[in-house]
Length: 318
Image (cartoon, rainbow, N blue to C red; front, side, top):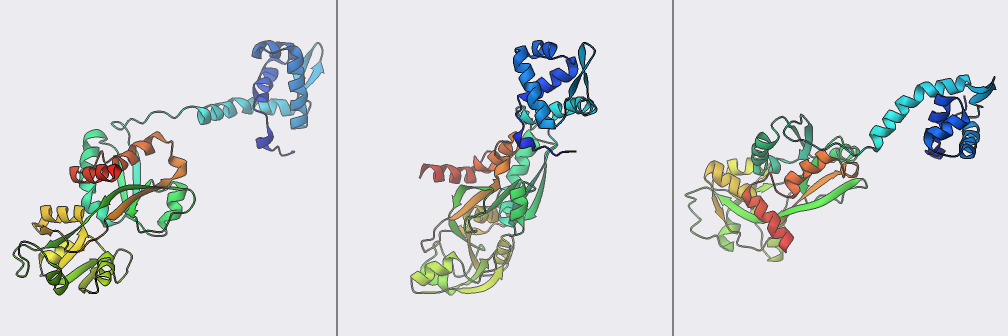
């Protein structure tokens, strides 16, 4: 059997083929699809050339299908239905009844700062939607491109994503300092001298031994002492709560640490550029209604806390 390059097929020939196989007559097929008999004859000639088969051969006063034509007649209804579904407008997404599973790749920053609010929103507006959270690693990128992971929420310091991914800055989160209540060396405000004399907790998701604070202090001609380096945001408030260590961390994490553990939240005594949070997703999901709805929970801040929604609005007004 000769293989046919489907990309070379003129889709206008398919209705003609369907009519010819159903009617077994050029004139009847022409009336069925509302074209002239000569136009239908021309279509039959092109179809015969395309399939390398006469398709319809004379028998008595009419035309009878060849075995190849019978094979095509049996397959066409299914092919047309697949084509119709592929070309049809996507069905609207109904959050209240959907049982969709959305996979998110991120770090525990998301779990600590936004996951509780997202779960609360889903419980009210999409009670049957399920989330699967996994840690973002370099191995997550191919799964993102393929659409196997629906969304990634990561720090903006990550490398530029490869082709096939969309990247949108969601908001910028300024830094704050957390310390335990009753810290013996911290009064109402934190000055640079006290700040650099204390032991610090460094959250290093990527495993680096320095961070934005160290780079800022280097520019000022001074350093700090990192007494503890941890790979998770959740570890930092726990360490600070039970020691005299301090930690310079994103303000949304600091606020959550205050709510959960009663930690003090202080203004850093040095100027630090805000941390950027970005969203990544596969370009192939740009127009998927369910994907658009899910992304918007984060990009617009609709499912997030008032504090983070304020950060989003501030970033868009700058």
